[in-house]
Image (cartoon, rainbow, N blue to C red; front, side, top):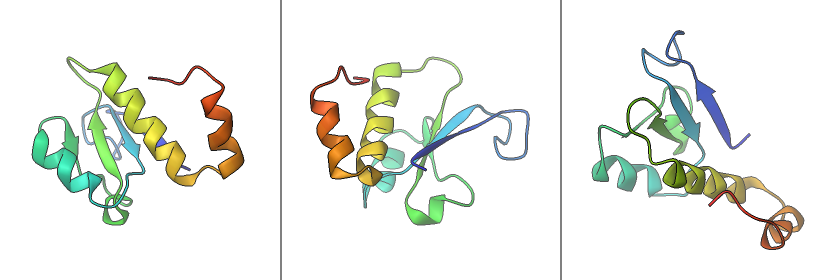
Length: 91
C-alpha cells in the first residue's frame, strides 16, 4: 500500500478529508515545514515517514498527484515503474 484516504467523518480523518501517502526519507518533515496547514503527520503510519495531505478547501491537485505518484514509485517493482515511462502519468 502506498496511499490511503482518510474521511473527515471518521476517527482516522479527525474532521478533515486527507490522503496519507508513503514518502521518501526526509520528505515528510520537508513538506510539513513548507506548509503546516496542508501537510501533517498522520496517525499510525506517520512514524514510518508517511505524510498526510489535507484535501479540504483549495487543493493543488497536480501536487497531490505528484506526491501520490512518488509514493507509488517507492514501493512498485522495477517492472511497474518502467511501465510508467510509456504511460501518461498522473502529473
